[in-house]
Every structure is written in structure tokens, then in C-alpha cells.
Amino acid sequence: STFQIIKECDLVIATFSSAIIDALILKKNILILQYTSPYQLVFEEHIKNCTINNLEELKYSINQILNKNFDMDEEGYKEFLAHNVEWTKSCLDEYAVFLTKGIN
Image (cartoon, rainbow, N blue to C red; front, side):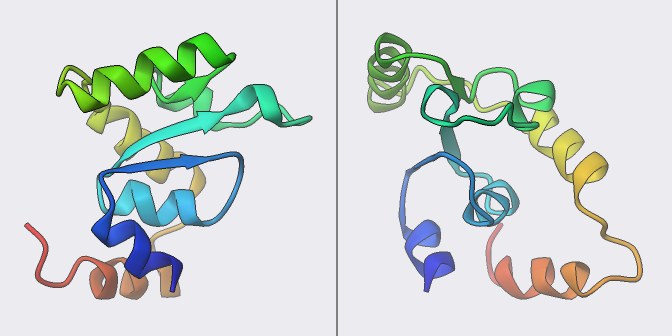
């Protein structure tokens, strides 16, 4: 499943997908290729360093991650989830608990 792949990876590169929500919940490094999408994605409003606007930014960010110099925007992740994913009285709360079971 997509979740299992994301759980094992160090980096998620995506355009727009529900897999990004899994990556946020699992606190994975995420790079979102805004420049490949015809839509203005909401991630940029909350997660400052994950939106990639051109190929040079992509190369730079991948190098930062490989060299352990990439600062994950954990507060931005929390903000995005709080503003865009309904947690209360929702199956997403149970889903998040299921996905993160056994993860610190």
C-alpha cells in the first residue's frame, strides 16, 4: 500500500495526492512539485520549505536532505493538518492512530 511505502521512505516527492497526508502524519520529509501542477496547492500556505517551484529548487532540496541539512517544518505540518484535515469525530483520528501505531 502507499502507506507502507511512505513508512519506509526518507523522502516523499509528490504533486498532489492523499499520500501527502500519510507523509505528514508520519513526519516524513516532503517535497511538493508545485511547478508541475496546474493548481495552486494549499501546502505552501502552511509548510514553508516543502513547495518546489522549479528544477533548481528540487535539486537543492534533495541535496539538503541527503546531506542532513534539511529542516522539516514540523509546526507547518501540524498547522496544515489542523486547518485542512478534520480530526474530531472523524475516521481520520482512528486512521492516524492506526498509521502511527508503534512509531515514536
